[in-house]
Image (tube, rainbow, N blue to C red; front, side, top):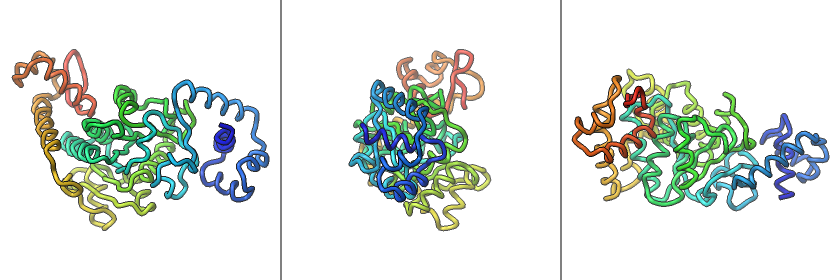
Amino acid sequence: MTDIFEHLLVLRTPGIGPVKYNDLLNQYGTVSAVVDAIGVSGDVRDAVMREIDVAQKMGIQFIHESDDLYPRALKNAKNHPPVITVRGNVSVLGRTCVGIVGTRHATATGMEFIANMAHAFAAHGVAVVSGMAMGTDTAAHVGALRADGKNNTIAVLAGGVDYIWPLENEKLYYQILERGAVVSEMPIGFIPKGTNFVQRNRIIAGIGDKLILSEADSNSGSMKTAAFAKQFARQIYAIPSHPADSRAAGPNSLIRSGDAILCQGVQDFFVCDTKQKQNEKKSESENEILDKIGTIPLSESVLTEIVGKNISEIKRELIVLELQGLIRKQDGGYVRC
């Protein structure tokens, strides 16, 4: 604990990030010497002690880059965080990982495509890494959680690992804790600002051996993640879409430039198996409900009559669609997002 305490003293000192941390360590030789040299304030010491105390109470772990638990691929990425905080199943960090990112305003078709792909990766023992945002990220996590196992997905957050954002994904957050992990380089309790999301994106790109880019505008955060992936020499796959849709600009441009491999589906990575086909059949069932929902709120009872299913089936499939960010509750019913 003393060792991680000193590393945190340096990293929690204002103005010191991974680059400065490494410069100081190279200059002074040991973290103890760095602590002495920079003259850590009493406020920083108190804050770090409180953070460690909260971590112990919440079951949050600090993983230093020298630890065997630190993600292998991330350690090889330039300017990686020297210390990450992890909540959930730390063992998932030892899995081979794939990053999946895209727009928050994904189409229903795009999200289902991503969910099926994420499920296939998780079913084959590959952990899916994303940022827990609405839209594509949510579809990636939810798809991975459909697979059996306890090490299916990693959510990288821009704030502290205890700060749930967006609030709409609170339920998903706790599902990820049960069957994966939540990771951040920021202090526990930290509330993110705009620039922190870009920092978060480099970790998503760093943890994954590959990055899959779904629908994304040309100037989106997802494209910044792709830029980090290119910098880290990761394989980048992009899912093409109709050029008239602005959400196609990002992936289509990467394919055209040769920076990404055209991704046509799960078959690019795995031979389809029975479990995957069963999952696709389930997805068709969920799409049947989705097709009936529009801008006018429809209640569960009305949907049972339209779709011809019992109320328990309707409730279960509505939960999945809501987690994917495809529908939302409004005026006692459900509407498309």
